[in-house]
Image (tube, rainbow, N blue to C red; front, side, top):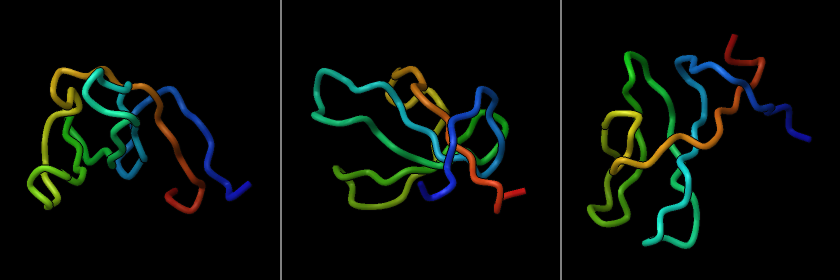
Amino acid sequence: SCGWYEIKDLRPGAIITWKKSPLTSHPHIGFYISDDHAISNSSEHREVRSHGIKYNSQELDKIFWHNFLN
């Protein structure tokens, strides 16, 4: 209802979610930067971190886009 929709291919600025791990009760959420890198918060370290798109070996689940990012 806010204009976000799911897409298939990664684009810089897209919101990405990783599949839920057995250690968490919810999926991990971040932003795709480029070149297979993302940023997301770390509740363990309480800071924003840059990392690869395979967050803790978790597979990507969904990619979201909004047309205001065009």
